[in-house]
Image 1 (cartoon, rainbow, N blue to C red):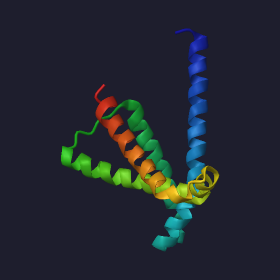
Image 2: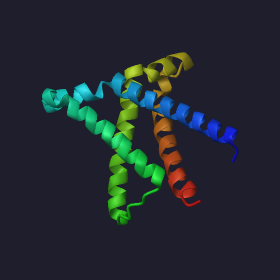
Image 3: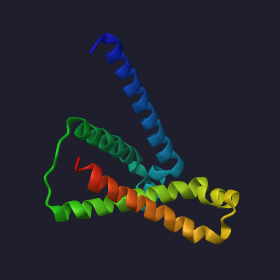
Image 4: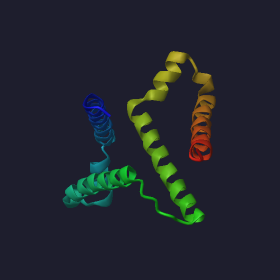
Length: 141
């Protein structure tokens, strides 16, 4: 590749990384994750350790992703870990939705007050179907 292409890839990659990193920090800040964790655990004196743990985890798993490392676990262990990861991500998404009041605004604007249960079920089933499609179809390719 020529110099221009490499520089363009570097700039786009850095911009994407900054955007994702900023979104992650905003997400953690809006949900007040670290202070809530310190409050629940009673560990206000360890609040810097919580911050370091999050940053270290993000860096470690980014390096693992970049290098394509694979950890061959048995299928039952992968299933359990995947289940807990899915629950964690789902709860974070639900908390973010609650914080920014997306659903009440959506229901009011689209006049769906009597269909809110259907809307919630469609969202949940769509997420499940999309995840299964990605894991079963795209991961094979």
